[in-house]
Image (cartoon, rainbow, N blue to C red; front, side, top):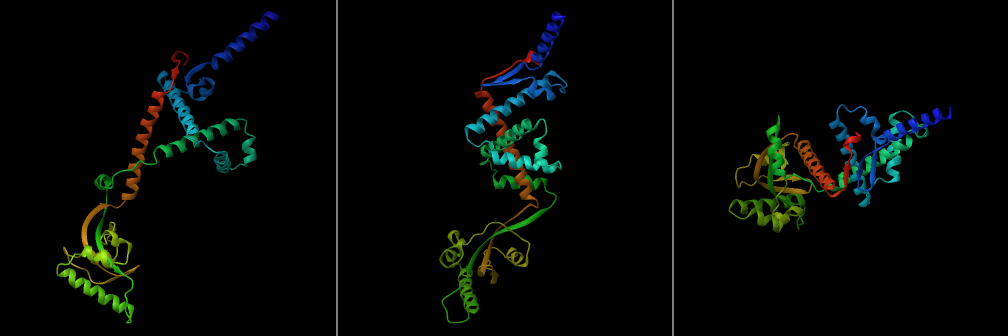
Length: 286
């Protein structure tokens, strides 16, 4: 009877050991079969199993790097995420903590936040050239918006005992007359404009042609000075410099392009982590 019991114990221990064998090593961390068991038993091929292990290796390397850079998940971040998880499942945090796998869930949440922090840190300077974005997004656009770039001379006050509005308009008319005769609008803007844009000759960013004032400016001919118009900063005169047509959803399109570029950049960066790490996958154990 004792021999039978001993044999049963040996067989049982052997089964547990077989399930918890080491299937990979990454730097100083081991990956066991049990740690990935739910995923591995549902894998439909050996290649699929290898992909699962490789993804786990990537996760470990990213968490290691986040810890090295001191941007790993904070206790507060983890707790806030757990509160959100409990709310989304219509249970209290105490009920969530009573869940048998709570500690594993907590570790998983911490890991995901650490990786997200790392992704943001590594890709924070990824951008896309504005003109490139406009070209790409315009080709995909179903509708376009017209924009213009103008130069303005804005006056908010002048030294005069007369009515300020009247005095400002008179001054702008004087400037307009000189510009129409050949004086440099840019130089006059740098000399007289009372808006911060005076530094670059009164030139604005691109403006949507979406209101009567901008439409009036859009209708100007080359070097033609506009009539006096009111802005949030004072009365102004302007000239039209450039025009373009862009995608009506340029902002969303640009954000998507930046996301895709950042995703590719980060994927290549993670591949670099793999090249620098010690990695061993025991394919026969899968």
